[in-house]
Image 1: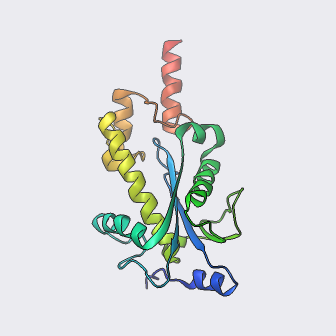
Image 2 (image 1 turned 180 degrees about the horizontal axis):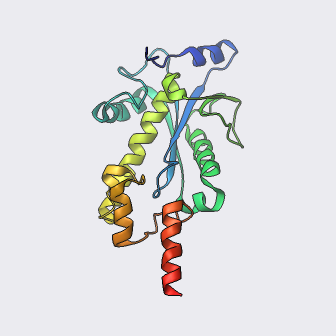
Image 3 (image 1 turned 90 degrees about the vertical axis):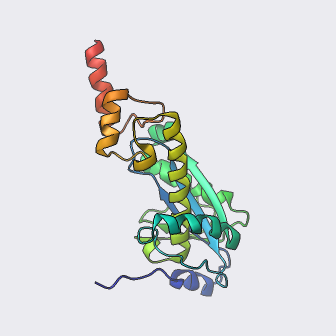
Length: 212
């Protein structure tokens, strides 16, 4: 099967419609049991595309790290996140969308159009936009946002892993791996765990039954 590389087709279409500051937006961290959900927005300069930019899922971790440092020097980047408390209060979808709108609001240059990864447009958008399913594989702006968000969150989880050893967050980024589940059994639930998520909720419920 031929792999399609992301390009500027969606950006060029928006530009031809009169938009000038087009942001790609992506989030990371909907599936983990621990940690915030985080998003980035990137406005690329079509004349200065970072070399090697592509779908974050198809490039190496080493290359992602290089691009994480390179992209902000060649593009405008905004960062946004939603806390574990907000995830539990709102639900993970709404919290993900909140992180996206915060990333757009963080851009030094306000966007006039946004390309959103996925199939749902976040409420409260500061500008018109378009959703793109698997956008990080189709749009270079979304691919750049995906790289920024992934590396940013991975580094946050490495920091949390140093504070809370035993869960393997520096390796699993809070996703429900066997190591993480075993850590929950051995060390219990931390303040960074999402208590409404199945395995964590089940463990808390079992603890409550034992206490009762």
